[in-house]
Length: 210
Image 1 (cartoon, rainbow, N blue to C red):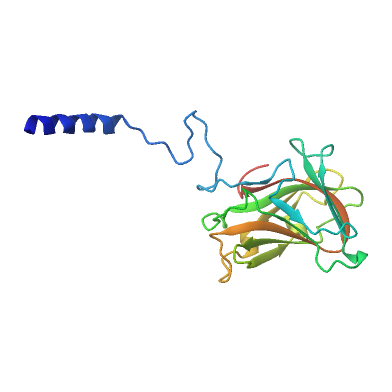
Image 2: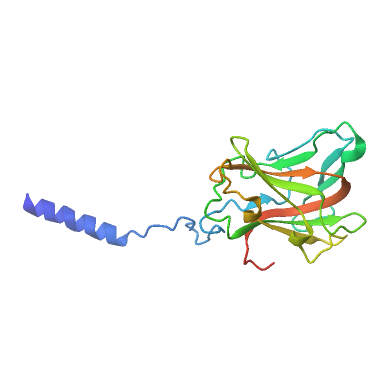
């Protein structure tokens, strides 16, 4: 009996020493999933308008269309035309519940990451975008900030692709009524009027060089 127990112990010991657990974001083919401190839901929009994206359905005030010709990267962008003054549109907005509307826990990254996107106009340059940009949790609580000149990298926004980078901390996601452990969507609220193309919406590390 003791011999059998010893044999079983030796077999288990050898098996355990040969097992190498995979890292959380290591794949068996040797590749890795890009992440920021374990947060890997980084792509908000890349090429295609899908069911993750919704917008105000009133073409008098807002048109949101898939763009295939004028893109920053890949094979698709978003073409947005809006006019708040057109009347009959008390709220104009667009939301993206990226990663299939799953919850996004930003609690570990909000001080070291930012929402980044590329944007260009179809005419007159803009020093800032007349938008409010927000995050919403699954209870409907929201936190907002502006697309002001200080978040436009190497502005103004012109007919050339320009980066907008908004540190997550500017949203104040640690506000007591907001659940930053379960972010539902990114939202854009449009004021005034304009026309832009937008592409490559993602979460990036603040120290990432683009």
